[in-house]
Image (cartoon, rainbow, N blue to C red; front, top):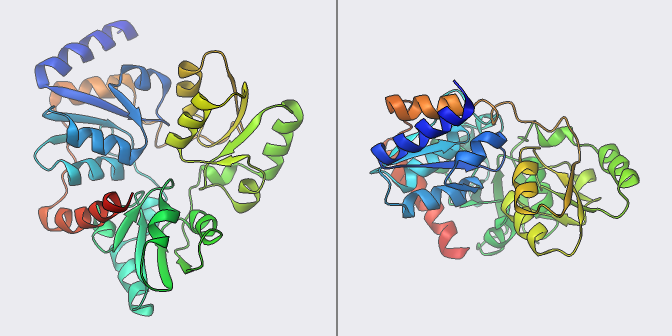
Length: 302
Protein backbone atom coordinates (compact mmCIF):
# COMPACT_ATOMS: atom_id res chain seq x y z
CA UNK A 1 0.00 0.00 0.00
CA UNK A 2 1.33 3.46 -0.87
CA UNK A 3 2.26 5.70 2.03
CA UNK A 4 -0.34 8.29 1.01
CA UNK A 5 -3.05 5.60 1.14
CA UNK A 6 -1.95 4.52 4.62
CA UNK A 7 -2.01 8.12 5.83
CA UNK A 8 -5.48 8.60 4.34
CA UNK A 9 -6.82 5.52 6.11
CA UNK A 10 -5.26 6.64 9.39
CA UNK A 11 -6.93 10.05 9.11
CA UNK A 12 -10.33 8.47 8.41
CA UNK A 13 -10.03 6.01 11.30
CA UNK A 14 -9.01 8.78 13.68
CA UNK A 15 -12.36 10.45 13.05
CA UNK A 16 -14.30 7.18 13.35
CA UNK A 17 -12.61 6.23 16.64
CA UNK A 18 -12.47 9.76 18.11
CA UNK A 19 -8.72 9.22 18.39
CA UNK A 20 -5.59 11.33 18.51
CA UNK A 21 -2.04 10.30 17.65
CA UNK A 22 0.81 11.35 19.91
CA UNK A 23 4.42 10.88 18.79
CA UNK A 24 7.61 11.23 20.77
CA UNK A 25 10.41 13.34 19.34
CA UNK A 26 12.47 10.19 18.65
CA UNK A 27 9.88 8.49 16.45
CA UNK A 28 10.51 7.89 12.71
CA UNK A 29 9.84 10.96 10.58
CA UNK A 30 6.78 9.53 8.82
CA UNK A 31 5.18 8.75 12.20
CA UNK A 32 5.93 12.26 13.47
CA UNK A 33 4.31 13.66 10.32
CA UNK A 34 1.02 11.86 10.90
CA UNK A 35 0.83 12.77 14.60
CA UNK A 36 -1.52 15.36 16.08
CA UNK A 37 1.03 16.28 18.73
CA UNK A 38 4.80 15.91 19.10
CA UNK A 39 6.68 16.16 22.37
CA UNK A 40 8.48 14.42 25.19
CA UNK A 41 6.82 11.66 27.20
CA UNK A 42 5.24 13.71 30.00
CA UNK A 43 4.23 16.55 27.70
CA UNK A 44 2.37 14.07 25.50
CA UNK A 45 0.69 12.39 28.45
CA UNK A 46 -0.63 15.75 29.63
CA UNK A 47 -1.92 16.43 26.12
CA UNK A 48 -3.70 13.07 26.25
CA UNK A 49 -5.33 13.99 29.56
CA UNK A 50 -6.49 17.36 28.24
CA UNK A 51 -7.84 15.96 24.98
CA UNK A 52 -11.49 15.04 24.47
CA UNK A 53 -10.43 12.03 22.39
CA UNK A 54 -11.56 8.61 23.57
CA UNK A 55 -8.63 6.75 22.03
CA UNK A 56 -4.97 7.73 22.43
CA UNK A 57 -2.50 6.20 19.97
CA UNK A 58 0.82 6.70 21.72
CA UNK A 59 3.81 6.37 19.38
CA UNK A 60 6.65 5.91 21.81
CA UNK A 61 7.68 3.18 24.25
CA UNK A 62 5.76 1.26 26.87
CA UNK A 63 6.38 3.41 29.96
CA UNK A 64 5.12 6.45 28.03
CA UNK A 65 1.83 4.76 27.25
CA UNK A 66 1.62 3.76 30.91
CA UNK A 67 2.06 7.39 31.98
CA UNK A 68 -0.76 8.38 29.64
CA UNK A 69 -2.91 5.66 31.20
CA UNK A 70 -2.04 6.96 34.68
CA UNK A 71 -3.27 10.44 33.79
CA UNK A 72 -6.17 9.30 31.56
CA UNK A 73 -7.69 6.19 33.18
CA UNK A 74 -10.99 6.54 31.32
CA UNK A 75 -9.36 6.62 27.88
CA UNK A 76 -8.14 3.74 25.77
CA UNK A 77 -4.36 4.09 25.33
CA UNK A 78 -2.90 2.10 22.44
CA UNK A 79 0.79 1.36 21.82
CA UNK A 80 1.14 0.36 18.13
CA UNK A 81 3.99 -2.05 18.94
CA UNK A 82 3.48 -3.62 22.36
CA UNK A 83 7.12 -4.77 22.42
CA UNK A 84 8.48 -1.22 22.14
CA UNK A 85 10.08 -0.84 25.55
CA UNK A 86 12.72 1.38 27.14
CA UNK A 87 15.81 -0.57 28.26
CA UNK A 88 16.64 2.06 30.89
CA UNK A 89 13.13 1.95 32.38
CA UNK A 90 13.44 -1.83 32.57
CA UNK A 91 16.76 -1.58 34.47
CA UNK A 92 14.87 -0.99 37.72
CA UNK A 93 12.02 -2.92 39.33
CA UNK A 94 9.68 -2.05 42.17
CA UNK A 95 11.33 -4.76 44.31
CA UNK A 96 14.77 -3.33 43.58
CA UNK A 97 13.66 0.15 44.56
CA UNK A 98 12.07 -1.12 47.78
CA UNK A 99 15.38 -2.74 48.72
CA UNK A 100 17.27 0.50 48.10
CA UNK A 101 14.71 2.44 50.14
CA UNK A 102 15.22 0.02 53.04
CA UNK A 103 18.97 0.73 52.94
CA UNK A 104 18.34 4.51 53.07
CA UNK A 105 15.16 4.95 55.13
CA UNK A 106 15.60 8.71 55.56
CA UNK A 107 16.10 9.46 51.87
CA UNK A 108 13.42 10.89 49.65
CA UNK A 109 12.84 8.98 46.41
CA UNK A 110 12.88 10.92 43.16
CA UNK A 111 12.22 8.99 40.00
CA UNK A 112 12.66 9.94 36.41
CA UNK A 113 9.46 9.80 34.37
CA UNK A 114 11.33 7.16 32.31
CA UNK A 115 10.18 4.39 34.65
CA UNK A 116 7.40 1.82 34.74
CA UNK A 117 4.15 2.48 36.60
CA UNK A 118 4.92 0.06 39.44
CA UNK A 119 8.24 1.83 40.05
CA UNK A 120 6.51 5.23 40.03
CA UNK A 121 4.18 3.84 42.70
CA UNK A 122 7.20 3.45 45.01
CA UNK A 123 8.45 7.04 44.57
CA UNK A 124 7.87 10.14 46.63
CA UNK A 125 7.90 12.32 43.54
CA UNK A 126 8.50 12.09 39.81
CA UNK A 127 10.71 14.34 37.67
CA UNK A 128 11.71 15.01 34.10
CA UNK A 129 15.11 15.92 32.70
CA UNK A 130 13.87 19.52 32.57
CA UNK A 131 12.73 19.87 36.18
CA UNK A 132 14.89 17.29 38.03
CA UNK A 133 17.06 19.93 39.73
CA UNK A 134 14.06 22.01 40.80
CA UNK A 135 12.22 18.96 42.13
CA UNK A 136 15.19 17.73 44.16
CA UNK A 137 15.97 21.15 45.62
CA UNK A 138 12.33 21.49 46.70
CA UNK A 139 12.50 18.46 48.98
CA UNK A 140 13.18 18.40 52.70
CA UNK A 141 16.08 16.34 53.98
CA UNK A 142 19.67 15.88 52.86
CA UNK A 143 19.53 12.54 51.01
CA UNK A 144 17.79 11.73 47.75
CA UNK A 145 17.53 8.37 46.02
CA UNK A 146 17.47 9.05 42.28
CA UNK A 147 16.36 6.40 39.80
CA UNK A 148 17.06 4.99 37.29
CA UNK A 149 19.59 7.05 35.27
CA UNK A 150 23.01 7.47 36.90
CA UNK A 151 24.08 10.05 34.33
CA UNK A 152 21.11 12.31 34.90
CA UNK A 153 21.79 11.79 38.61
CA UNK A 154 25.39 12.93 38.07
CA UNK A 155 24.20 16.03 36.23
CA UNK A 156 21.73 16.86 38.99
CA UNK A 157 24.34 16.30 41.71
CA UNK A 158 26.35 19.21 40.29
CA UNK A 159 23.44 21.57 40.89
CA UNK A 160 22.37 20.64 44.42
CA UNK A 161 23.87 20.36 47.88
CA UNK A 162 21.88 17.23 48.63
CA UNK A 163 23.50 13.81 48.67
CA UNK A 164 22.31 11.91 45.59
CA UNK A 165 22.09 8.13 45.83
CA UNK A 166 21.88 6.93 42.21
CA UNK A 167 20.56 3.72 40.70
CA UNK A 168 23.02 2.12 38.29
CA UNK A 169 20.97 2.59 35.13
CA UNK A 170 21.57 4.44 31.88
CA UNK A 171 20.25 4.99 28.37
CA UNK A 172 21.94 2.62 25.94
CA UNK A 173 21.39 5.12 23.12
CA UNK A 174 22.78 8.24 24.77
CA UNK A 175 25.91 6.46 26.02
CA UNK A 176 26.87 5.86 22.39
CA UNK A 177 27.62 9.56 22.06
CA UNK A 178 31.28 10.10 22.97
CA UNK A 179 33.44 13.19 23.60
CA UNK A 180 35.32 12.29 20.41
CA UNK A 181 32.03 12.54 18.49
CA UNK A 182 31.43 16.06 19.80
CA UNK A 183 34.99 17.18 19.08
CA UNK A 184 34.85 15.76 15.56
CA UNK A 185 31.60 17.57 14.81
CA UNK A 186 33.02 20.79 16.26
CA UNK A 187 35.97 20.51 13.88
CA UNK A 188 33.58 20.04 10.97
CA UNK A 189 31.17 22.77 12.11
CA UNK A 190 33.13 25.24 14.27
CA UNK A 191 30.31 27.78 14.39
CA UNK A 192 27.65 25.32 15.58
CA UNK A 193 26.13 25.34 19.04
CA UNK A 194 26.42 22.03 20.91
CA UNK A 195 23.19 20.93 22.61
CA UNK A 196 23.10 17.61 24.47
CA UNK A 197 20.68 15.64 26.60
CA UNK A 198 21.55 15.13 30.30
CA UNK A 199 21.30 11.36 29.79
CA UNK A 200 24.67 11.63 28.00
CA UNK A 201 27.85 10.69 29.86
CA UNK A 202 29.45 13.46 31.97
CA UNK A 203 32.41 13.98 29.59
CA UNK A 204 29.93 14.76 26.79
CA UNK A 205 27.86 17.06 29.00
CA UNK A 206 31.03 19.02 29.81
CA UNK A 207 31.49 19.84 26.12
CA UNK A 208 27.97 21.20 25.59
CA UNK A 209 26.88 24.80 25.19
CA UNK A 210 23.48 23.81 26.54
CA UNK A 211 22.19 20.70 28.36
CA UNK A 212 18.53 20.26 27.52
CA UNK A 213 15.59 17.88 27.37
CA UNK A 214 14.13 17.19 23.93
CA UNK A 215 11.42 19.77 24.55
CA UNK A 216 14.09 22.18 25.75
CA UNK A 217 16.09 21.59 22.59
CA UNK A 218 13.12 22.46 20.39
CA UNK A 219 12.50 25.68 22.33
CA UNK A 220 16.19 26.66 22.42
CA UNK A 221 16.69 26.16 18.70
CA UNK A 222 13.52 28.08 17.87
CA UNK A 223 14.62 31.08 19.95
CA UNK A 224 18.36 30.98 19.17
CA UNK A 225 20.09 33.29 16.72
CA UNK A 226 22.53 30.49 15.86
CA UNK A 227 22.18 28.88 12.45
CA UNK A 228 23.90 25.53 13.09
CA UNK A 229 23.52 22.97 15.88
CA UNK A 230 25.28 19.77 16.88
CA UNK A 231 22.57 17.67 18.50
CA UNK A 232 23.57 15.18 21.20
CA UNK A 233 20.53 13.00 21.58
CA UNK A 234 18.61 10.31 19.67
CA UNK A 235 18.72 11.15 15.97
CA UNK A 236 14.95 11.12 15.48
CA UNK A 237 14.66 14.65 16.83
CA UNK A 238 16.59 15.97 13.82
CA UNK A 239 13.44 15.46 11.71
CA UNK A 240 11.36 17.74 13.92
CA UNK A 241 14.09 20.33 14.35
CA UNK A 242 14.63 20.56 10.59
CA UNK A 243 10.93 20.74 9.82
CA UNK A 244 10.28 23.50 12.36
CA UNK A 245 13.46 25.44 11.53
CA UNK A 246 14.02 25.06 7.76
CA UNK A 247 16.60 27.86 7.64
CA UNK A 248 18.86 26.23 10.23
CA UNK A 249 21.20 23.24 9.97
CA UNK A 250 21.43 20.27 12.32
CA UNK A 251 24.14 17.66 12.72
CA UNK A 252 23.69 14.55 14.87
CA UNK A 253 26.53 14.22 17.36
CA UNK A 254 26.64 10.54 16.46
CA UNK A 255 24.84 8.57 13.77
CA UNK A 256 24.94 5.62 16.21
CA UNK A 257 22.55 7.34 18.62
CA UNK A 258 19.50 5.50 17.31
CA UNK A 259 17.02 3.86 19.70
CA UNK A 260 15.83 0.61 18.07
CA UNK A 261 12.77 0.51 20.33
CA UNK A 262 11.66 3.98 19.28
CA UNK A 263 11.94 2.86 15.68
CA UNK A 264 9.69 -0.19 16.10
CA UNK A 265 6.55 1.80 15.35
CA UNK A 266 5.70 2.39 11.70
CA UNK A 267 2.81 3.94 9.80
CA UNK A 268 1.46 0.46 9.12
CA UNK A 269 1.43 -0.34 12.84
CA UNK A 270 -0.36 2.91 13.61
CA UNK A 271 -2.98 1.94 11.03
CA UNK A 272 -3.36 -1.59 12.40
CA UNK A 273 -3.71 -0.29 15.97
CA UNK A 274 -6.56 1.98 14.86
CA UNK A 275 -8.20 -0.68 12.71
CA UNK A 276 -8.31 -3.31 15.44
CA UNK A 277 -8.15 -1.01 18.51
CA UNK A 278 -5.44 -3.32 19.81
CA UNK A 279 -2.41 -3.28 22.08
CA UNK A 280 -4.08 -1.35 24.88
CA UNK A 281 -1.87 -0.32 27.80
CA UNK A 282 -3.86 -0.18 31.03
CA UNK A 283 -2.33 0.40 34.47
CA UNK A 284 -4.07 -1.48 37.33
CA UNK A 285 -6.01 0.96 39.50
CA UNK A 286 -4.12 0.30 42.76
CA UNK A 287 -0.78 1.02 41.07
CA UNK A 288 -2.20 3.88 39.01
CA UNK A 289 -3.39 5.80 42.07
CA UNK A 290 -0.02 5.52 43.82
CA UNK A 291 1.92 6.37 40.68
CA UNK A 292 -0.30 9.37 39.98
CA UNK A 293 0.52 10.81 43.40
CA UNK A 294 4.20 10.96 42.44
CA UNK A 295 3.38 12.62 39.12
CA UNK A 296 0.92 15.08 40.69
CA UNK A 297 3.49 16.15 43.30
CA UNK A 298 5.90 16.94 40.51
CA UNK A 299 3.30 18.94 38.57
CA UNK A 300 2.51 20.99 41.69
CA UNK A 301 6.17 22.00 41.96
CA UNK A 302 7.03 22.31 38.29
